[in-house]
Length: 464
Image 1 (cartoon, rainbow, N blue to C red):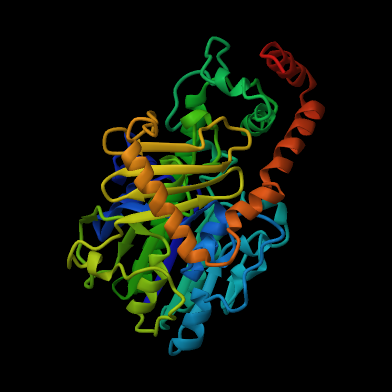
Image 2: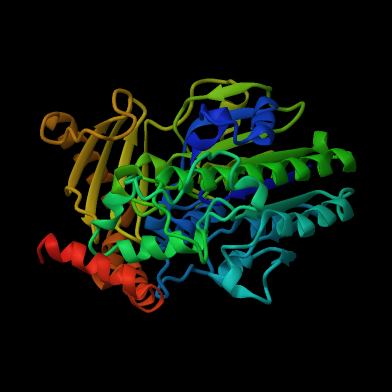
């Protein structure tokens, strides 16, 4: 048996055509979904990248591991279970390999891998700019060389992550018009964000280096979608490599993402700083020919911490009791409804927030530190009636608000016992994003002084 855990970074579910997106961004991923099972309500336990991948590979939530942010003070305990380590030590003859750049971020991401392949090891500044083709150039030969062995392979694409700068042929794939039209005012709200505009501006300038300033938000969204299509084509190439090696029937493929992306949602531009649906609703597709049905859609609530449990169960490897997830196998095979009555997700990099989302469609968000965004301490949404989370019902549906607040408080208390809450701890010492924004303002002031002064005048007119 072989397992490939395929993670496409920063991939929001609702921008894949198999999840109903208006653009046909993902024909190869759509084909994978058609050949297996698509989970329509999958969520990470923690966002963004480092806490999400840590939870994915340990099967434990950040509230237990302490990894809830990108802080240099966080460290994963040597005692924490780690999926490749478990497979390598307990699986009989399993090879474990990764093609990823995460090791540059935190050393524990290489734990347990016999082969760790990093295409940009010599240029660590490209940690988030490595191309899917570069990943495939290492992953596909490794697959061919190990086709006669049982293995676990972790493949990590970064392409939909900022910077949205796909290869040339994808940049006009979903866009017709002038991205720098001075009459287009769709990015004006971003300019009015007092501290954040330099961060956004620097990003926009990198999409079209040396050219006029971008004014059309739809052009930026089209670049994000172009990155998805580029990544999707490389997914197809890797799937064809399985066919050519004759191991498709013997391989479980799991495709997901660590988190999504806010493109212009909730006045958040081109990042993932919260726990609204664009950031925490991710795709999850599992294919295993001959063992799970084709063309199944599962609407039950699931979390990415369920993946390690399911992989170990599939490989018939004893499951450590520390794993917090559940088996997805009954849902894959259509045996009962399964899923969670509620899931929890935390954010600890740009803001400090925690959300509870119920199977009935209610979602409560508690904000510990909003940093640069003016959001209420408590938000309540009915996702069935308001999937865009546009209407806060916290002051109207007070009974539901109180019930969900109580459930969240009890959930947190049950897991912490006498330990401090790592989310509140990271907020108390200063979220890592604060330094990002300070640096962005200095970069804009140096690289684009005219635009910087224009922004300063704009915010000065709004009052101090």
